[in-house]
Amino acid sequence: MKLLAAILTALVALEHIGILILEMFFWDHPIGQRIFGMTPEMSASSATLAANQGLYNGFLAAGLIWGLLAGRRDIKIFFLLCVVIAGIFGGLTAKTSIMFTQGLPAAIALLLVWLYDRFEKP
Image (cartoon, rainbow, N blue to C red; front, side, top):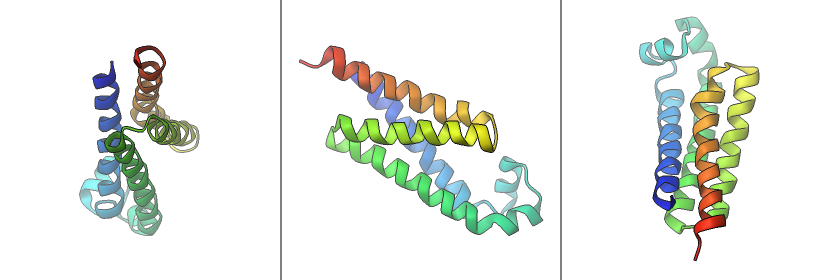
C-alpha cells in the first residue's frame, strides 16, 4: 500500500504541474481556450488571474514532491488536504467536475497515505 500511496501522490503532483503549465502558459492560446471552453476575449481578459492560479497549483505540486522526496507523511497529508479542499471549493464555485478531477484523486491518495502509516508502519 505504501507504493500505491506514493504513486497516487505523485500522480496528483503531476496533475498540478500540468495545470500550472496550462494556466500559466497556454491559457490565452487555442489549446487552453479549447480545454477550458473559453472565447479568445475571455481568455485574454483573465490570463493574469489564470497565471496566478497556475502558480498556486505549482506550489501544491512542489509541496507534494517535497513530501515524497523527504518521506514526510505530515507534509504529504498537508498538501493533499490542500488539494482536496481546493477541489471541493472549485467544484462548488467554478465547475463541478473539478471535484472529481482534482479533489477525488487527492482524497484517495490522502486516504492511502493515512492508512499506510496507521496500519502498515513497523
